[in-house]
Picture 1 (cartoon, one colour):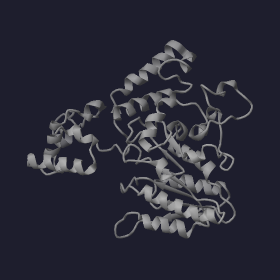
Picture 2 (cartoon, rainbow, N blue to C red):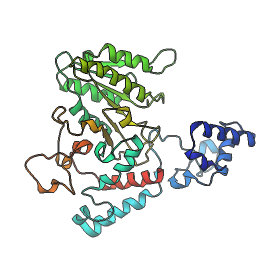
Picture 3 (spheres, one colour):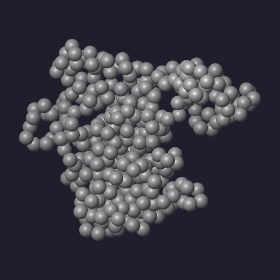
Picture 4 (cartoon, helix red, strand yellow):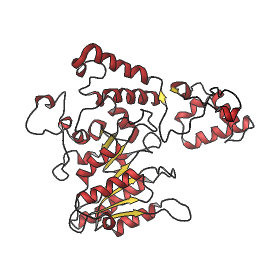
Length: 369
């Protein structure tokens, strides 16, 4: 069996295959020898599709001139490797700019007036959208998108201004939620709750998270959690958490009380773990694309907004800009006085998107797919 044949198998089959390779080659599963055996058995080399920076030992450490050596790159959680197709994709857009000028907005594979739409179907597959065109949009960067989403979905009221996050969340998440609480005239010391990991394991407990949400439900307006923790690598049971929040909200609806909305930061989850955001019933999510999606430093972020919120901007009014008006078909370039919002996630867009970023992201998504 070739290693690439294991790609479409379930976890048990893949595990059996890995053990087989280990046993046949007499190499421990976590050894370099086993890794080389897997490489040799595969007809597909992912390494060949990415530019991998060489390791350059210092003269002091190797006693010589510090010549470059092949490296093992294990920092994709910070910045993913560059797909070899990215440079050509970017040069194509730069050439179009040089040769066609403003006409590039409406020409080529990535017409700039709508270029971000090219990545939406692929992003929708990654996060489990039911209708990517309605539920997914590519825009801005992660923390900016979290602010835009919270501007709509964090609706504090008297006695109900709380936000719950996990202790040990990425600092930018904590900065963002604390500033949202302050922006609405409240004190984060009173209204920001952090659920701590269990001392014995150092990990967050689904039971503890849901118990805290249940206990604080009358004062909570929003729950915002990281799908995978940047420090521990723990992947939260997002499905169970979403199910628990839905259960609590069903009880609240029976009492005519407003729901607690659930948002996710998927910076370390998108492209890394299986996601089914629509089926799980998550209200909204945001993620970056420069880690496990290999789109380049500071590249385009993306959002998910569940289809049940596609037309409820009356209940959850958003911040708006002209890129949130639909185009082709749509009246974006008619410059109307009134705001004609695109339905769903696309209506959260405010400004045009950098096509060079889109080119990098599209190249990467196609490589990964």
